[in-house]
Image: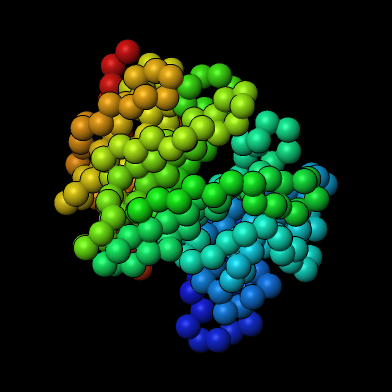
Length: 276
């Protein structure tokens, strides 16, 4: 499942490929977020309408788009609400407001190659597929990726985003926003990475670490020192930017998967051999 930039002016900008149950997929079919001219570059799947069926969350030109799932692999007409804009490179789902209802976080690139800028939009869900913007974090980075994870061990979802600086203004790096009983706090900047980000306990100390793309086919692993503070500078060789993390070897530390290019039929991964 994914979105794409519509160069051919088709009436769709999201494709869905249903699984066969054996690791293969049926031919993809096309659908729309409600605005087929929009660059739908990110999608997330989750039940945001409260009926127990997976929905698709993406974006139109200026709002979030929810395609309510029917439970049979097809979807109802899109629900448009909340805020979007610029280039929405990632959409994250999770309860960040603490009310027990799934919220959305839109990671948006608003700058260009010369001068970088990006917004993180916190959008509170109401459980019916509708969202409303409750906070916007403005950065001087072309934001590309992010993750929601409990970085402090208090059971609340915290936020981390990463992006690239411009050639004449802005900066590359990572922003971490910690959650508390009073809500999301201020963003803390770390000079690490330049685009994509995944979360996982990479050194098996029971704290969630962050991995970001480094220079020249490397990945930087920022180790959690406790209370959501990170030590940067651990660099490993990888084929490209980190795209996902998960344990596929049973060791049980998570591996880091990378995708060299959207146009490449290959991927790479790094096996964690840390001894504990």
